[in-house]
Image (tube, rainbow, N blue to C red):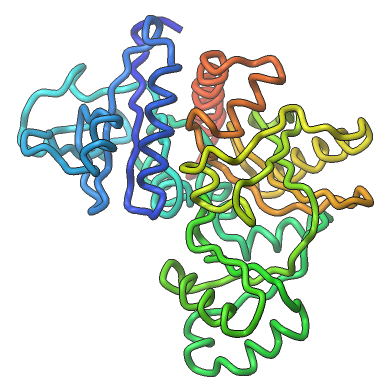
Length: 365
């Protein structure tokens, strides 16, 4: 690819993972080969406004406060010429035109298929999974449904609607206690980076955890506790995906929560994970199977539990995993033989390939 290719890196967003996105974007911008690509940035504020030319590092340091001189932009939905325009009518570099969008967005309105739908309507090429892959990968309840169909082993779980719990909590609490027992994990169905996730060891903790998760989503997933090693595998590709070597997480906290992932350096990553060759092959096979089950594209990280008797349970898939300096996804590929800069280059290539393939179809008679 030549320098003529313009890549728009988009970050921030309205989800609880806004800050994670800023850190991920800093790492990607550092890694991308700017001698080969013309890189522009767009930061999405917590209010959902899009600003051109934002520096994610400065935004993080300022608490994502938008400079009064920041240029607010919007995506033009002209399938024949997708581009960005300034709402203040200011000229943008290259008239706002681009060759590919690299959305480094985690959580709702970024990783869940919504912004991907926006890009599809505008005929804009982008990195990562499409609408279906993003939405299935984000919704833990629907993710489990397609994983079950694919024959992937998972922890037992119960899905609860916030409205149901508020209407009649007692039978729901009783069902959780009898079917799953303690300890159990309570998760918002549509969120990532362990935001809003709690571990409950008794009824009072369970009620408090449900209240917390309910702040983030209308749908909650409660899972049984699996005692095992936390293993992650990175997947890269489109229709012929490949799996990386597995890595193991030794969390600084009771489980790998938000603080352990992004703030507490006491957590340790073992790459590659010390596992038997047979277990490694099974994990890689299951990771690819999970990727294909949700119809992911480009990249994903699949999380597992491996018990002492070598039973494997799929925990979840992340279709836009973290890219921070301590994130597992780029570290796994680096250990597999693909350094960070090459990884970013491959993701750009995969995004363009997917776009070309999708456009090679008819959507009307």
